Amino acid sequence: MKEKDGRLKVELYIERGFEHNRRAFELLRAQQHEIEKEMGQPLSWEELPKARRVAVYTEGKIEDPPERLGQLQDWAVEVLGRSIEVFYELR
Image (cartoon, rainbow, N blue to C red; front, top):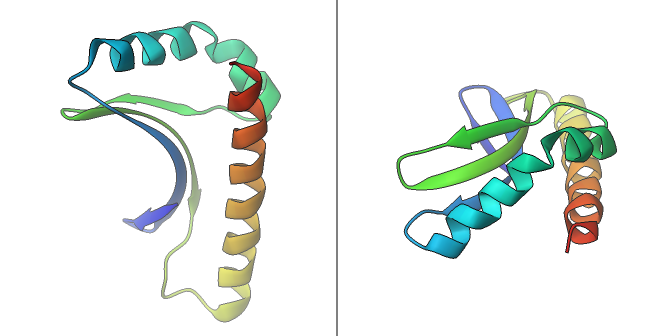
């Protein structure tokens, strides 16, 4: 979970540099429709210079009021838990 530019994200981060990492991302990407259906929302599939990332974003920043921070924390816990369930099932 990271916060940058007013957005909070939960991500699966796959480093580049290893052939099996590239293949893992491609296998996940081939199941994008099913994964997003199980997650209940679209995901961001990103090919970065040093990694590949599958992420879910929401608006929020550390300076938000305490009640909003609580909502963001709840969102992150829910999305992270769902991500673990969905990606674990793919094994």
